[in-house]
Amino acid sequence: MRLPPLGLVIAAFTATQAAADSLITYRSCTLSECNSSRSVWFNDIGQAYNFNANDKCREPGVPNIVEVCMDWARGGASFKTVFGATRCLRKGAETRKSFIFSSLRFLCTGILLE
View 1 (tube, rainbow, N blue to C red):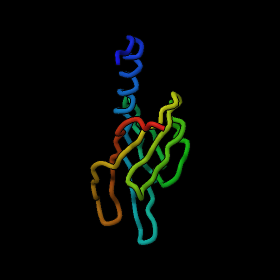
View 2 (cartoon, helix red, strand yellow):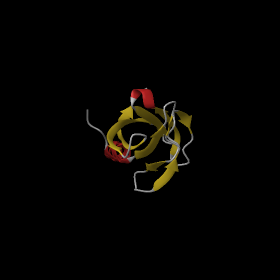
View 3 (cartoon, rainbow, N blue to C red):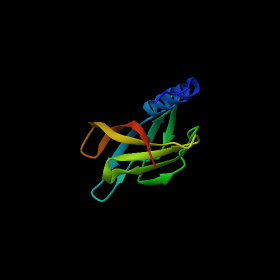
């Protein structure tokens, strides 16, 4: 299938957007629960935003991102953009600081087709 020039531009823009968003979580755990409320979202142009990465869906306060849903049990998250795309984040490298504190990086792995 051959895309028109505008289609190529849109496809390139979407791919760039999908690859650039990331999340670094700072997670502390006790015997009964874990807390990731002090995490950082990085957008496609490298700007950083404080983000609550505890389980559930929430509005992140990041431009062009409507909702982020964290799912720690499955090791990932999904987020919706103002452009209508739903993208996924997958857990990457973990840096363990101590028994109760670690940091994780979540990277965007692509656009989810609904």
